[in-house]
Length: 106
Image (cartoon, rainbow, N blue to C red; front, side):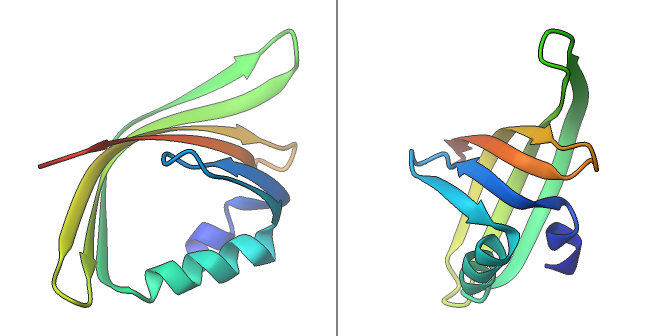
């Protein structure tokens, strides 16, 4: 979780794959992320690709990532999904906006 925390800006906006949205501070994100992570016994991420992007017209830096995430819950349930996230970075290279898309794997 500390590695995840270090990638986030002081405040950020998140658009989740289920349609929900969040706007708030890094500390609030970490609070909720930690609560969710506590329900899991294992998280495995298999990164497929990442692409850095720069928009000339708005002078913004983005990173798009594609990965598989396999979550094992403490109950034994296993969920897996394929994700594509678009992440906007601030001048310190921290994520300040993320838009996530999910395809559930069977």
